[in-house]
Image (tube, rainbow, N blue to C red; front, top):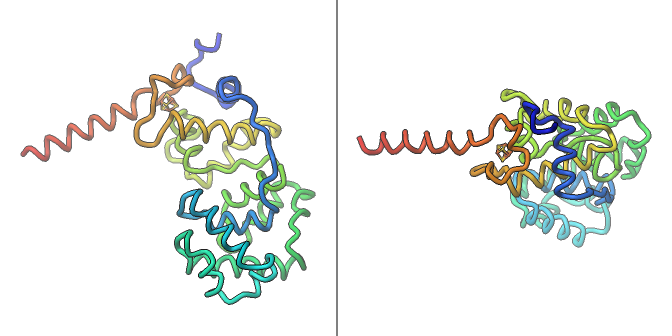
Length: 239
Ligand code: SF4
């Protein structure tokens, strides 16, 4: 019986959250090179801001070639709504120049023909591309079973004990990815993000409403920890 188990496994996440959240269907988002630009724009900003900056950039230039050829200042101007425009414009230009130099175009579809480890290594050799960006491109654009670990997935999988408390976000990619079948990687990613946004929130996880609470080692503990540190802070304040 499921509830007699001690801790939630990745398979439990799939079946329990899958039953509640319904099927997660993969649909390609941007072209892989565009996704690369988008992920640079999404660093340290909200989805709304990065989306706005991306659309503004694509409106301002006629394709990726034109962006790679443009002065960094012109790119900076087009993406200023996304924050950190100076750094991001230089990074976008440099990355696009390197891709064009190495591939002869911006067609990254060849990555889908490579073993995933090699495809990841190719992407991670680009400046500013880490495990998360590489996984986003492979998963969202090319439908490969790469697991992007964002802040929600990192937090929830840590609370559930799927990864250890000291595992870094970068290392979490390689630990979580093999925990689920390749055909489930995208859905697992979607379910944990949704769970993190709606239930296992960063500040106040709703453990009492959580359908994984039966096997979560952090059940009720995050709020208790917060309350304890608040009490300690109050004691210090009242001295
Ligand atoms: S029981 Fe609480 S800490 Fe555990 S996954 Fe659910 S909401 Fe998060």
